[in-house]
Figure 1 (tube, rainbow, N blue to C red):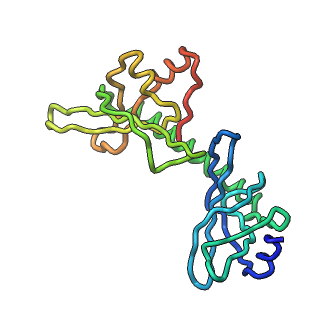
Figure 2 (cartoon, helix red, strand yellow):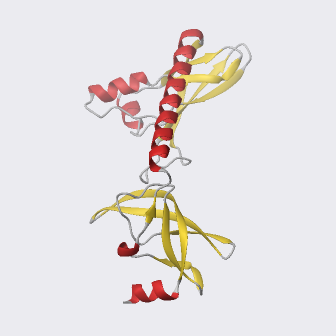
Length: 212
């Protein structure tokens, strides 16, 4: 009854799903749906009180906004109307872009390793990439350093994102350095070779890393 009263008295607007996090709690997995919406010329950001499996970022969801407190919103499962953002086109486009990005990344890696200079860089630290989050998890990055004796300059390199903590392998096998390839004259084009860590993960029976 309360929900129906809100639907009658509150203003109906369209919100847009900006992200979905999956959080593990004691009773199982919980989905947190983030939306933004415009109400009387102002943009608000909130979370929905409902989730269904067909939800995707970019979808439009009808919600009810409290006119006395626009931060308070409501939706009910029976009235949860989701308008896909051209689902077929979006998934095709995302798939094409993902494949293109992976192909370009692989080609760049192969070119750098084939034509670039190889040095041994000292592992300085392992840290979380706080700029990226998937399912409420942040990937790990290995930072390495190499000193060029000719120019008396120290260069720092970062690995790709790693979803398993590499500290386990680094500590267990006392890994202190990693090969780094870079293009002469352009230190921004480099590749930190973490294949030795991946091989150790496999030999230890741990799932191989997924990188972004």
